[in-house]
Image (cartoon, rainbow, N blue to C red):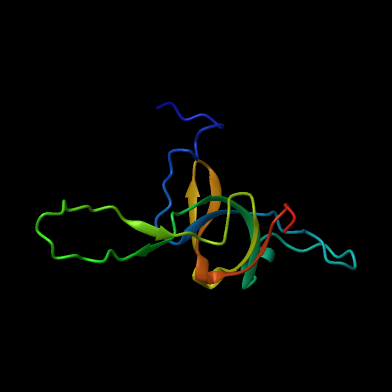
Length: 123
């Protein structure tokens, strides 16, 4: 598969209860107008970004039936995540893992490290 800007993230598979977040650009000025040096916003304990991909969720254990005539099924069922692709997430940086992929910086964040979600659609 040839990697293009359109499909470079489509071949990624996020595992379990994790989400892939593209961090939003931190502001380079304070509210009063002072310019901040590079890297100051990245050292904050809480960051914000857009969710690009989500994992399937929490795996639910299968109930094992001890009936020999039934066919054994190994289908894993998942409890879905609250986070959806396109949501804006505010998350704890201590719980996240920073990665570089295709020249961009991303965070892999477990759902337990997400503090708040902002969704564009109305509830």
